[in-house]
Length: 310
Image 1 (spheres, rainbow, N blue to C red):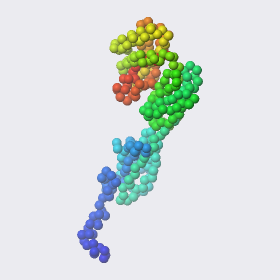
Image 2: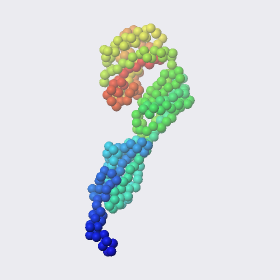
Image 3: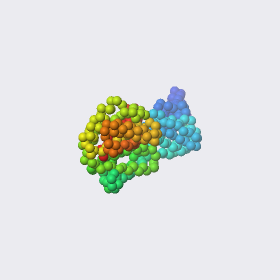
């Protein structure tokens, strides 16, 4: 009572107002009286970038998603202890304990770690089928992995990648892979032996096609006429006519479409006097992309026929 007397009536009112004032959250400007009990952000543990994640409290049950900046808010939880699981695609889920106390807002930021999937394989010589030493380049990661005695291995997070295998005196091989779960991937390469005609590689044009079409466009006929003349001038030259497709449609459909594109170009050259035995048609579906398939401009680059010197 003596202390209260010293404070005075005005002081008592100020203290009462302070004790009743809403508790401020650590961020967002929200209060306990807004019903907020738990709040925070979910982020990539390595880069600190925010994640689109799920926050699950099974006992409630409650399942909420984070905002674009990785933030989440849990409202109106009774006082107590809860197990919450935070998860995002391509990341290891994390379960943490949340303590909800009367009159307090619990601030909880959670970092998640990317799942790494093992990718391995062997580089083989196309003729002997024996392993050969070389390298494997990984795009868009910018990695170069050494394939000692033909064997290579690396770990990659979920995503789409282009792997380019190289070996001395061999023609490189390219494959596209999709890492979408934790199951290890086996990706082997078969590299054709260089023939000595590699200097011709840059003289061959790339023939592009319209969406879902294998009809040769008029603007490419003059380029194919030049290919015919080049082959006539080098009678020992054998080429693979490699057809490709973008990612629209099923892999099987695109395999047929890419082969039709290769056959259309082959038939054109045969009509120009090139022996069929010198033109090897193959369809690679969407497995050997020139660019990723996210944008229209990228997909156009994948609807093509290329010439590979064999």
